[in-house]
Amino acid sequence: MIITKNITFSYGKGTSFTFPDIHCSDGETILITGGSGKGKTTLLHLLGGLLRPQEGEILINNTDIKTLSEKKLDHFRGKNIGLVLQQSHFIASFSVLENVILASWLATGKHLTEKAKLLLEHLDLKDHIHKLPTQLSIGQQQRVSIARALINEPKVLLADEPTSSLDDENAFKVADLLDNLAKEYRSALVIVTHDSRLKQRFTNQIALS
Image 1 (cartoon, rainbow, N blue to C red):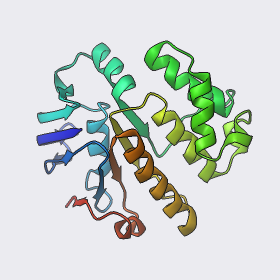
Image 2: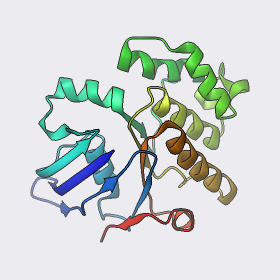
Image 3: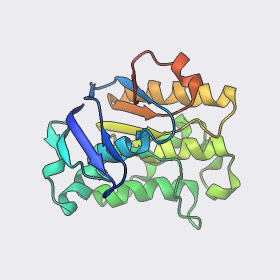
């Protein structure tokens, strides 16, 4: 579950943002929309603990992440938050399977190989697990990112522009996939996007202005 209250953030003396409050329950999806420069990615990074708010509260699974030390926040993020970012940041020399396993090892100290294989198979990537990420299409790379985000069964799943590089057919496939997986894993899903196609898919929306 995600609950935010009175969040503000500023980049030094430059751009400042005041964000609307968010409440996203387990298995629920919220679409965050808005034009360029409205703070969509900033908000996602705040929810993921990659940035810290100047004011306000961000409760993830009843923990105010603003109060955590960097070390505790890193540990909390690994166990509770799955991130699907615009740039996948794969380790180029690792196979698809190894990239997903790495996410489990960093968060738990365990190599969840069989779980990673099952998740990749669930995402129709069974025949690609031993390939390098560069050998995959953009849509396939996106699904690997989703597998990596889900490997630790996070309470919160955050996706930054997950369909921006995809054609219509694959954009709706990824949107459906994220929504269905959030329900299956009982994760609160927040998608930030300027992709107008997704406004047709999700009714629960917050527009940044």
